[in-house]
Amino acid sequence: MHLSLYAVIGLLSASGLSYAALPTPIAASTARTYLSQLVVAADSNSPAYDRNLFKTWDTISGSCDTRETVLKRDGTSVVTDSSCAATSGHWVSPYDGVATTLASDLDIDHVVPLKEAWLSGARSWTNAQREAFANDLTRPQLVAVTDK
Image 1 (tube, one colour):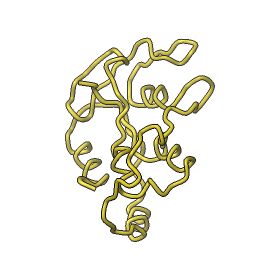
Image 2 (cartoon, rainbow, N blue to C red):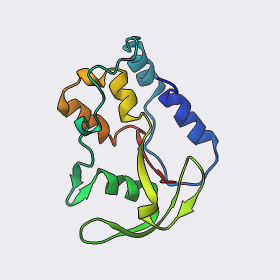
Image 3 (cartoon, rainbow, N blue to C red):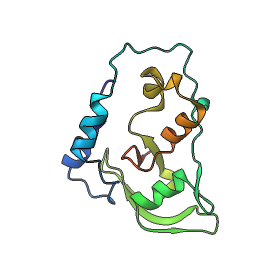
Image 4 (cartoon, rainbow, N blue to C red):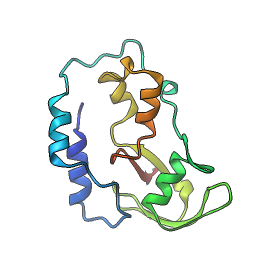
């Protein structure tokens, strides 16, 4: 892995940018437990990475999918229509500080990219495990960022 999740979270926290609250990080003791369970192994792309093996944007609540849920969480004053699409709101990308009022200007970024997860071992996960990872709202894994 090129940049650890903790380093990225630290950079986001230290940036001082104004944005809606990201999910609460896990306790340090929990992080240490997870870290102690990691196996260090060489990256492998065999079988070859295929993004379609990571089903994204599950329905989370009603008609709201993962993307729409992150947009509502990361924005302020977000208004949605009957199909849960954001029609207005304000977002500030934590990576570059760019502000927007258009949800269409945003991508939902996987802090640990799906390909990196694949190379680091997700190729041996079940489809359900990959889907859970790609839609994970319980950890600070998904953030709304500018699509530029």
